[in-house]
Length: 89
Image (cartoon, rainbow, N blue to C red; front, side, top):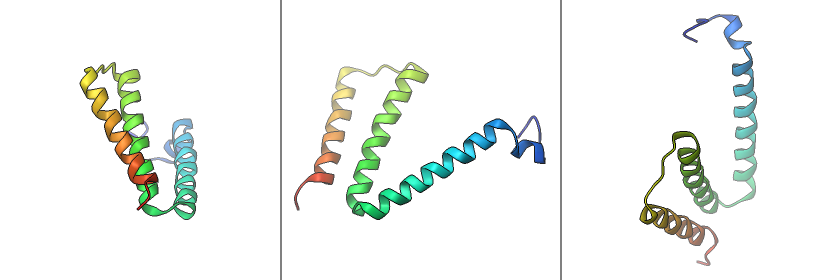
């Protein structure tokens, strides 16, 4: 937007079209999941996905290498979310 400004050409650029298509697919995917899985289970699984993606992208894109104790804590958090999602209440 800084380079092209607020013009029609900006909204027809390749990156913007790719973003809109990806965001639309993600939104429909979330709506599908929300309608087929209980809300509590869905939120727990989204939290697990968020933890995994944040750490993988941090490692791959930013080169962040955490201490082993931090990875152990992340694994415990993931296990806790899975227990919440799939545990019998």
